[in-house]
Length: 287
Image (cartoon, rainbow, N blue to C red; front, side):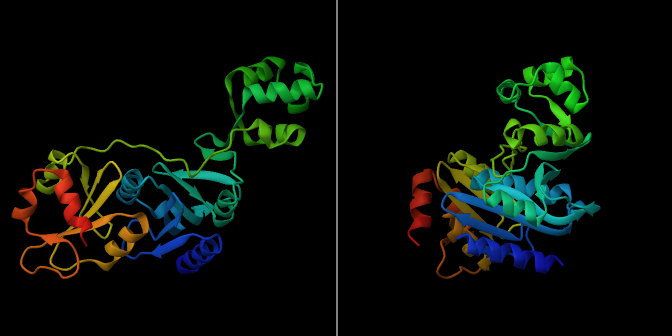
């Protein structure tokens, strides 16, 4: 089932002119790019199977790549509904039909929260359309099944309403009175400072840097628009090189015994000797 969903998602994105990479044994299964838009997608049979370690790594990579992290799944215990946004450990979670609608710029406005299915009203827009269509506060209240004071509250506070009330409002005024959920919006997360030897050196050179797990490289570092994937290994992971090409990053190997061919590489001692970020960037770009 998972492989079928990966294939379905991949084929759809290719038809929409995205360039994609399918990865294995990583915290995301698909990386897709179209222009400046980058998507990091985890495909799961059941979204409840993801753990916080995977999710945190997806969020971290989203930060470094300026990418949108998403989970696509058919269910999360129960079947995921169309046009509803769920979350798992801070990552937007959708079924394929909802994902397809989002790619076509038809963003949903219903989300699953601890309170159940809810939607956020745009108060000013609700007032504007209500008055334009000639509804009084009491008239609209009667249609929806709430008090006039509640309608006034909706219009003054961009309130969250239950899906049943949202559907009644939608039948009267359409979707423009609801705040759409942009599942591709970038989220900035704060992660604990990493004090490893290599990340500390990157920090000294003016990079943001973190050790990584569940991705094809050991360290990710970023300085302005420059991103470097660093592997501490004698054998490069080809998935790292493929991913770097897609997102316009560079690769660096810090080898122990055997120097890899055709990829920027150096010993630990050579790396720690760098004193200027521009010198390191120049080195990795020579390849």
